[in-house]
Image (cartoon, rainbow, N blue to C red; front, side):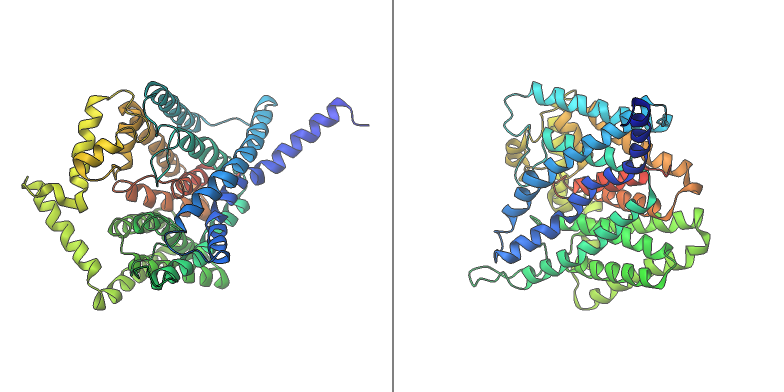
Length: 438
């Protein structure tokens, strides 16, 4: 029969051995969720727009609750190791966790103060980001992933995300070619299980930059071939998807990869430059017969000239984003401290600017939860970036790939919306880039 000391010793060892694996289960569940969604849609012969109702049901009914259970397991392991003096949280990580904690406290205060807001807990369809879901993003996906103390599970999650993106993309292409019913209009831009092309663009951005970095840093032929297939396939899908913000975000992520390799992986500079050149080559090849991307870049320059010249037509810049951002700033000015709650002014914004969402995540934080909350969010993200820059010489390949992919998503979020099925991947990747081996 085990005595007290033996039980404690076993718990010490178990919490050490299992923390790295348990902390990755929420990430695993969310990464495979799109694959489950695709399987359900195919099994039931769902066609667009039926696929739109499935993803949220899967995530809200199964993925989120199971993730919370494993997050509690992670919390027990971390708490036990801290109480036993087996682990100490570095000061720079304490700063990040405190900033996120303050952000959640401000978000909760905003939610309670805006009791007349029906969207405050679950958000506005279809993004479905309210207080409940946002708390899950931080407390479950970022916090657990940042405690993935073993490199192998983190790499497995990256490989799994790359692998899942292939059937997700094939299904999206199939949906784009034909809805399977004569009454639906055939679309050329694939979006698949996602609610629109922009949302799929966020997903593609993270996968493309992640696979590009792993391709650049990988040494084995078999793995490099796998990452090459993932990178090329998803880049082609992105071109067909034609989300301009995702193009720009990929360029930001790949440029960061190139700079990162120059700083800490000089021997991989040639391979990273080749991968980036391949990305532009694919864009160029497609541009020969499809001028959509080229026209998007031309329109960007035209929009910048409208805004800088304060032309009367500037409100239409960025597909109407400039009008949205100006209107959102006006709403922020009305409630600067605690905001309007999640999507608290969605109907009013749609009335004055033609769209219920801000299409800029920093502005979203400020309008939802107040300016102090937005500052905490930006500060927390910046602290993760600073930690990675300071510790750049000790970072492994997986950590670098996660960091660049998360940075690419952040770039896309400057002109995009937070969604329940893409934002968790950002927090997972950012969390894994923040994790360190024991």
